[in-house]
Structure formats: C-alpha cells, structure tokens
Figure 1 (tube, helix red, strand yellow):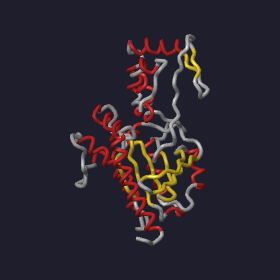
Figure 2: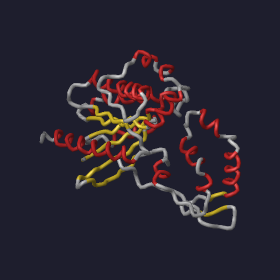
Figure 3: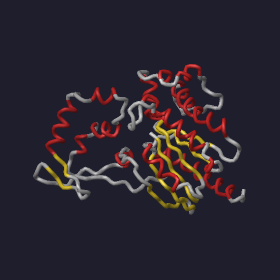
Figure 4: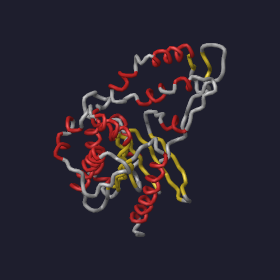
Length: 287
C-alpha cells in the first residue's frame, strides 16, 4: 500500500469520522452518519469469535484485515450502546483515499499546507494537480506488504509496486528538485511477520538472502537482529533507487514509522518539520 502527500509550504490526518451507537430497545440503532447498527449481527459475531471459528483464517491472511481483527478482539466493548472510540480505535480506522484531500494546519507557528492523494493506480493521474510548487513529497510505504499483492490485479507484489512507483516519481523530470521524505510504515506488522517466520522475505525478494545489516543501522532498544536486518533491507531498496539516479538536486529522507504509535509519529513529524523548513529555505535560495 502506498500513500502520497505533497507539502506546499512548510500529516496530520483529516478529522476522523467514527460511528457510535445510540441506545435503543430494537435490534437496530440509528447512527447520525447514515448507518444502522444491527445488534443481532453483533451478538452472532461475538458468539462466533468466542469459539475461534474465524480467528485462524484472519491470522493466516497475514493480517490483511488488521482493522477488522483489532475490533473483533474488543467486540464486547464495541457493541455496547455507550461505546466511544479511543485514540487507538481512531488510529486503526482507515478509509481508502479517493481524490485529493487538502489540509492546512500549524505546528509551532509554522504553517503547513498538505495534499493527501491515494496511491492506487487509478488515482495516480490526479497527482499532477498537486505537484505545482510543492516543497516536499511524503511517500508512505507499508513495509509489511512484502508478501502481499495489490488489489488492482491480485498478482503484483505490493512492495515491488511501491518500489516501481517510487522510481517513477524520483525520476520524473518535473520533480527532480523536489526531495522525498520516505515513511517506511507498519514496522510493528513487519516485525511480527519476520519473527513468525512463516513468510520469509527472500521468498519474494531473493536478494535479501545475500543482504547484511549495514554498519549505520541503529536498532530500537530490544529489537531482534532479524527485524533490524529486514527493515534496513527495505530501506536500502528505496535508497538504491535514489542514489543511482540522484543528481544532487533532491534527496531522500527515510524514516521507520508505526502509525498507531503516537510517540513514534510525534518524533518523526518533528524531524520532518525541520527537514521541510530547510527544504523551503533552500528552494528559495535562503540557505
């Protein structure tokens, strides 16, 4: 999965939409967003989940349905009429981006102007509308997608698709002065897959078998060496593209991210803020 953000001056996601259940004596409750909640259905889901009928199939598909799975684990809470989503609930919700979403916000008196566009193939033709006079591009990759395929053809490897797309953007003649901030996202899921050992990266990317962890690697505290090797391999696959065809006019700044880890995102965003400010100054020859 790929997500793209274009920053025009200097991510917070758009305001989240969530659904809550109003108390009702009937099997259905009205939600103000136009949805009805079927409590009979929720009761059946609770029963099925309690006897582990669907737990194994969910795990076997490599958590493609992680959103569904995370809410199944707390279905008894979710089905309550007074349920209110937590911050983690909101972070685990996702709506497929279609079109262009514009967001303006301010951090430490610095104004940001962000355009959020979908990474699907049928969305890419819309990108050109956002690339006029941008300061930076944030390219978001699901690092855990090395053993998954894209929804468009159910055949192309997702991570390979992201690499190909990154190469096209990096070499685009209109973007050769625009630097890219690379978010290697879903590090938590990547670690789970690597440690489980069921889907080996070398089965999808044979070159991983010859890869050694670089000297500049800085593992997280307590991180398994296998995880460190895997995440730096993915990082270096992207950096290999940027260094092979870079001409010194734009740069790639990689970051390991976990979108549901608020502290991680806070640190990364602060780094990105400084990077984008420097890019802005350099763009106008003030640095």
